[in-house]
Length: 195
Length: 195
Image (cartoon, rainbow over all chains, first blue to last red; front, side, top):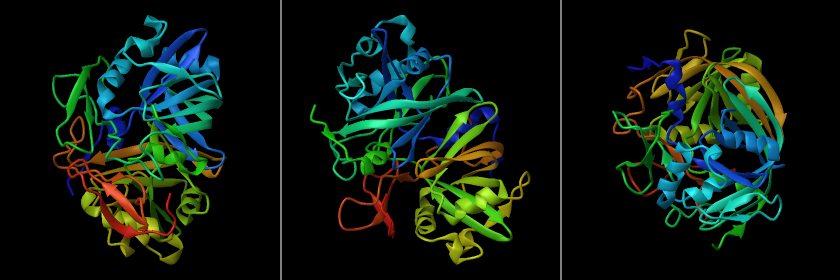
């Protein structure tokens, strides 16, 4: 055993690889979206999820105001678009999803934007949000969910999940997205705030 | 787009693949442990994590009583042991980790058991636990963390994470653990409660 002590700012990277889930939201005729790494289920019945987002994200502000949002699982072939969503702010555009080349339809339960290209989507209603350290911890209830290439489980022969593994070990600041299919990483986009 | 509506009981599987983190705990001279799928960071500073566990798990009761616990990241070569931890209860033994072939040392900060074979470990102190639907949502602060094969990020050439992908699509009820390295799944153990 040769484990070495880990600086606090790197601790969260132990959880990699993680599937980034694109959070989408519409508020006052503007559409925002961002990849969320810190998102998981917390209850079977009711179906609850926990989502931790830094409060300075415009997408967070929109979620908080709209009280509804959606989760979108995108196949690895949309890794470039997901990377772009992580590099831009919803402040810069009235439809951030469209700006990166993704189209949306309105969710039936909440009216929130669902990404048409997504392999799976879920409409969520915010139950609670509260500050936990640097992030806002959102608890939300799932109003509906649908998926392609999924029967009892994902069919990973057809759905190729994005596996976020960091931002590259060296000088590059590209998102490091891996897949279950190929060993090599695919750095798909530049970002300015490695995490 | 051919997405089909998803029954509530299958929703959580959209989050697969996920890295199972082994939660270890010592209380009244008994050592418990279980793989947790629903575990993520929620804050950079302080370093906080959220962990959702079904309250009927003996390991949950021990965490709640001890107010401290540890997280352990095991390489895919220990997939069999991790699967066994998911199939047995801490009620059945005084040292559940040893019973599946894993050894522990005492954490310096909390005295909680750290798995020697783990690629990374973190000692945690429970700050809060509360019921959210079917599960208890634990918020804990990380007291210390250490890792092997990790500099700024995981070195995935040396650390081969377990990727939990469900319990098999067919008659088998084996844990479906995948890796970044091979496409084929490796069903490593039997379980009785597919999730």
